[in-house]
Image (cartoon, rainbow, N blue to C red; front, side):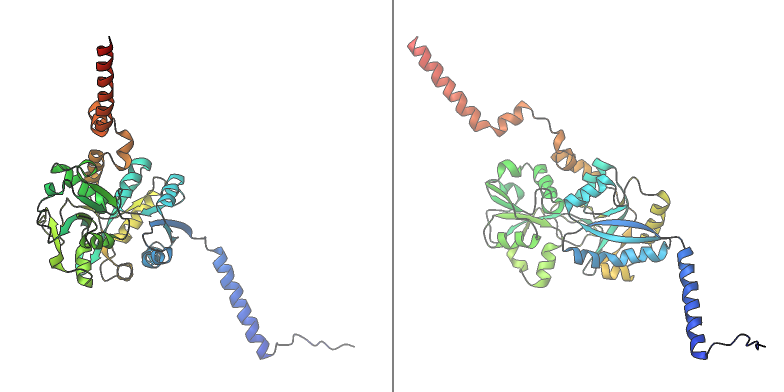
Length: 347
């Protein structure tokens, strides 16, 4: 007759591992039962390296993760063509880019700003910017913008808002056309500092850069205040930097047309709650986000200059043709006149 051995208990060392495996299986099952977080892509125009762009803006994305718990936000650094393509194809949900680029994308694809970046420059919180037109302090022949006629001029880039367009607008307002009245107009590219250095070295008679650049270079000791003469200097309340032009809003944080309205509202509130002492602001090198400023003045400027999204709408008049090809027209007219006189004499 066989004896009933019954259920034998597991040794203690096996009991521990069995319990551990059971707990892990329960946790895994719980995790699998949770719905996957929906990804949200934030395109950021990268002026510096992709790595630095991600380092700067990832804390802001992490803040959005913590506030909007059913989504996961990712920062995607992009150059200009990549931003344009991503907005066109709607492969991103939000975009952070400079003011001039935003206006072009707004006109072309209908993106809409939801907040405006308030930058932290030294101890100042700045949400507008402009341009500075300057020359060397020893140029006695240059006292006003009108004195720049016949002189050489250096800017950052033809499409740069702070590095040329605002200066172009100001010059035209005072009767100076950079493309007709300068002996030479050149574009250096980034960084803005190089424009200052080349003008001070005497390579160009005058130049223009974005506001705060001169102050930053003075602070770093790369230039001296006595070396610079600012032309058409303006005084704007609550704006601490030297400037020669009108001021325009800083970078907007924008939504794409396809982005969910409920998500847009949550992101807007989360960004507006970031203040200067917040980790996202500290690591991102900015002060805070403000309700979106009015960018209609930027559109007006682009229309007046026939630049950006409005450059293709330019209609040439006979006056424009004559102004651009005056030498060629005079030469051809002279040739016809001599030919006519010769034919008349022969006849």
